[in-house]
Length: 247
Image (cartoon, rainbow, N blue to C red; front, side, top):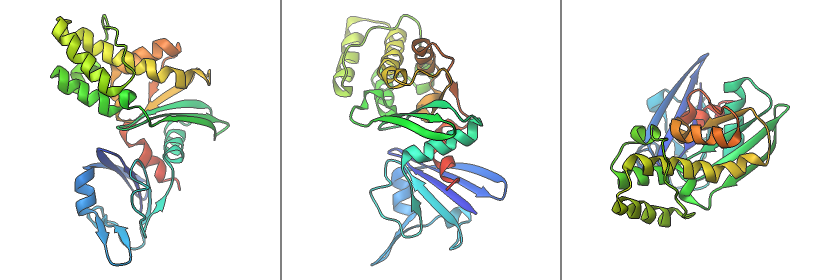
């Protein structure tokens, strides 16, 4: 048995490989650290016996929280390596651009001849992450699914900082701008921040991963900017933990 773990800022994603079968699971991050991390005086281990793991199980971890703790019973790899392998095996392609938008950061990986040619990562600004989308939905009092459907007449949002952007959303509501137009503006603004990361590689085969990839409105705007039909890979939210299975 092999286990891949993506330690996200909001959720921990788990891939369980038993023979040829692979199952995916998701747990709240706080729940995971409280219930799946076992500490002794000398070691810290991940306890995934609830998923059938034992002392012979190969565990590989990645993600936002991979550097917070040193696990005695798990290999730790970078997010870039995990997402690259996940996309490589999900798509069957050996040259492509992968756009991954997580809860706290966004990254673009260029794969050429089956290897990582280059990558760029933005972990300094939350305005192009899943956390910003969640906060925008809270302010607009809509669901993520409702936001994803909003693509018409996007209002222009100028703020480049997540905190100021949220204040700008409140201002648009006060001005009486329809929620649908504000939501479309949110999707368009995130695409606008991601596009420069993609543009430098100038390759037309582009895939998207991460939970935010399920936002069809964002993918539509980003596809228009990139002049490419961006494809969402299978199980996009679990791409990181899936990639861990190949190490």
